[in-house]
Image (cartoon, rainbow, N blue to C red):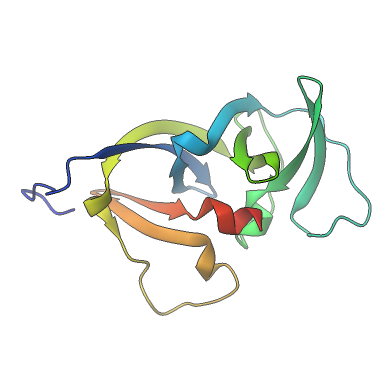
Length: 149
């Protein structure tokens, strides 16, 4: 949304802002069950996806964990004290998303979501629902259900 423009749709939605490799991403807060510090993971041999980092014991429940860096084609990096796991609700239960850091909550309106720029269409292209331009920030919104498929 440009400066001086007022959105016509006043319905607000909250999104959780997180970071991967210095870039900001967002997903709807209604899908986020909790934000956890990095927990010990147990690797799963023969996992169906290469981005599955393992499983964790989250308050007595075994929860699969996806490394979003690997899922989105970003180079892997070691986990540090800022690394977080976003516990997201999917159709089959909770799943953890490993992110570099969880930065912020942001109120947005639907009219602020712009389409993904054309040009680079690869296997990760369909994982995004749009971008939000809050100059100087550009936040890419994840299509949560597609990441979980």
